[in-house]
Image (cartoon, rainbow, N blue to C red; front, top):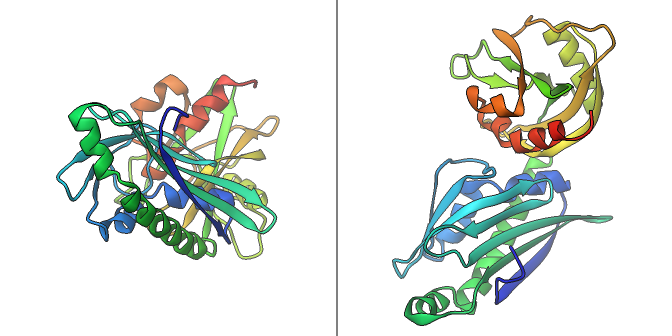
Length: 281
């Protein structure tokens, strides 16, 4: 949300969960939908579940006013939604900040000063009274969800880079996911280091050793409630991956991402992967 959005009201809460987990929660469409429903606000989304850059929400208020919001940013620092179309002056942000005691979550709702009849009516709809009731609900529900997810099963995935391309793997099972594409990886066992688990999974799935480096993007909430965490990686010297546990593997550049039918969670991290590919090798 830019500084042009005035007035902007904010609320802040400390959450006992990792920052990337909190960032995932505030991007979950159903958490937002359930939080605001008690105030007569209905949310419809182009996609359900966790939202990514470019996804849209239609917000319907009690006064039959509809606002279309587009996700402008969704990463490990939070999410930003801005008005798109006829009402471009509305914005919503959720920002996460690591602290020694947990994660500081800040919600902000802002809109431009009213102009004309429609603007004055919108200002009434987005009154301070309504917003001041919405902010505690959003914060409280996000904290409850993040606290629960903090103990979820962790799955790790490898974004294996080779120059300007990354390795994508086509699922062979289960039937609901067969034929769709993902970044290879698997579950972290109890007490296992995440990077070590990812190196083991790649060895088992691709029969290739990889060097795992930095985290990439926020946590990604899977349909079964598990958390997927992606890491940048590269093949070890002389390693040649094979599709031992997948239907196929393929090297793809950023401009080829749209050719593949990605699993929902992996789709969300594609903007971060494209940024990675545009950086130094």
